[in-house]
Length: 171
Image 1 (cartoon, helix red, strand yellow):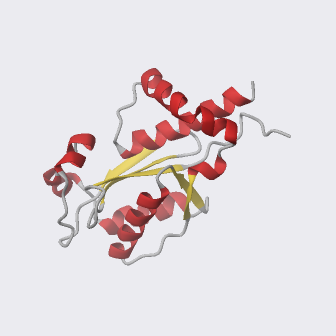
Image 2 (cartoon, rainbow, N blue to C red; image 1 turned 120 degrees about the vertical axis):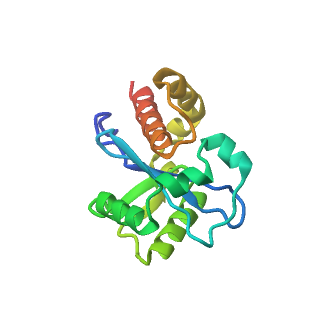
């Protein structure tokens, strides 16, 4: 028996980072809530977070200087995440390996433990959804004029893609 398409949307978390290599760290954390609203915070780098990949900056368009000026302290971002996600118990990510590593680093430097789990978004997807995912995601980018590589917008894009693939397979 299939679930209703009007079911609650998954809460999706996305993280933008200073790069993808060793020493990279989170620079922006965003979530798309079950009601479709999204929010994101820039993260102020810790003193020992020095890795910076100019190619990553070209993708997300966030300078290191901007992080120092507009970013929030890691403890404040970690507290926000716990406040947002602890009652849900979990959030989902399309890049679990990277996002979980950066999330762990954030919480470690905040001196806190996450009160939620991060799980791979793919565990929610049926084979049919997985087959439709890439093309549907590209359609959603065009249809919704989403700015890519910003944490809140990317989280919302994933959530919208999930929703649309559900709709497509239940028609």
